[in-house]
Length: 293
Image 1 (cartoon, rainbow, N blue to C red):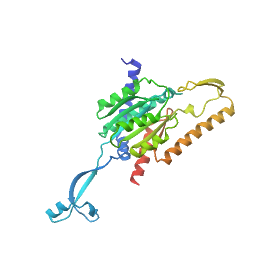
Image 2: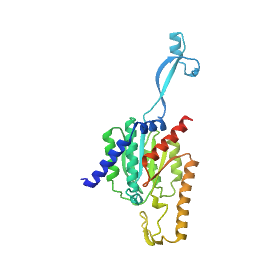
Image 3: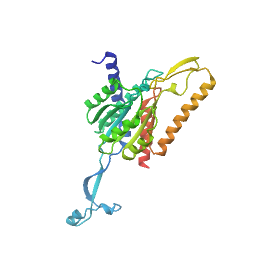
Image 4: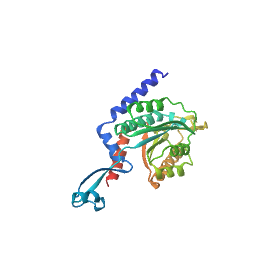
């Protein structure tokens, strides 16, 4: 049984996500993501400027005037959400944790997929794959996706992105649109990520919290790494510590960005302190413009 508090959170995210899927956002989704392959639509009369390679010679011979075959994009997609459920996702310095940001993003994408008659599936992982929901259509399926994401109790604390990607590659038989939603607190996954990118339309969603980039000067604190359990005592008022820490996180962020660019992997930056919808709209617009270029 779900607690009243958790049920209220699930309903809130479902209502908010459904409410935010406006015509503009739905149009941005359609513009940003195309189907895989073309299917025959109709035959029409040839007009000057048409590609002569598209001429249907059988119809042309019968009608004694040129006709061409017209194809349309196969719009239907399979969308897979790979969601990091490791312990670091429970961190949040404001009114939302990173886990709740992941759930909100996933809910919005699930509603957008359903609105476009696409299938939506989920893989929840920590240091192993903990939950797999095969791609399926329907608003009832969206409710299940949101509920499973919000109620899942992770068994592992650490992160294994390679394991999640390898599992996904083994269960998807056709090219799919895949969102990897994580804070990327892992190592050694880059070659697997690049390999999956060559077979699927992969988008990496980097989820963070403002306090992971800058700590206020509040004196001595005992910090515990949520995934490894390692503890360290630091003086947050120490300027040397502040400079060293900010340099470390900037180097990590720059390295990840350069990797995405080098392998032509699309990415979205989400933060528990900013608007998820704005980040999605910006990404849709950027990708849509690239498609039209």
